[in-house]
Length: 211
Image 1 (tube, rainbow, N blue to C red):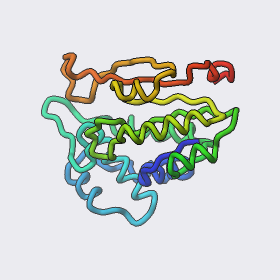
Image 2 (image 1 turned 30 degrees about the vertical axis):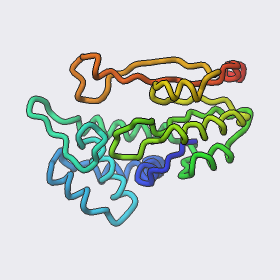
Image 3 (image 1 turned 120 degrees about the horizontal axis):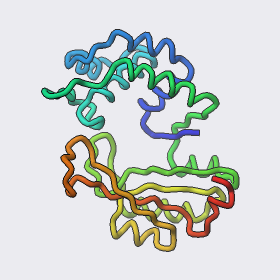
Image 4 (image 1 turned 180 degrees about the vertical axis):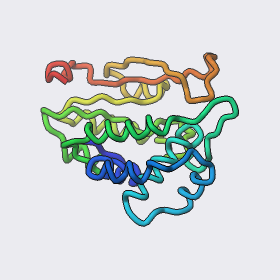
């Protein structure tokens, strides 16, 4: 099962799962064009397949994969491969076979699917977030999530940004710090390394269930 509140993303997943060939036809002759990008932004499309094709094209050609209203051109390098994008959709279509695609509030989703055999991977919006595609969470939002996770029958893993407040909220859990390059602006300096936490129950329940 996969769940997200982004309606355009969920529509895309549905089209990839059930109408991959038609979606690929819609994308086949779309060029890496600035004019196409802004035409696709301003014209919502008449069908779910058109909307999905336009969303996917903008996602793959926008600046940094985040600002869906800016075309990401580069004077020193070409844009991503159109053929590679098509192969990505084919592979994703196979992966989504038998996957349930939900569009629910996170609390409703946890309640609906909470079973001892379930494993939840939870990737909420990070705090102190400057993303344009979605609003970052507050520490209060994270605290509400923490309280709800403590009641679950299911095993779970959470990813969040590594801050003192997050560490305090999840005190008593297993906290695994990781670091990754932050976006396309990275030039190898420490200032561009983004610190995150993998958070799981301290009891080892995930391992006992074979998750």
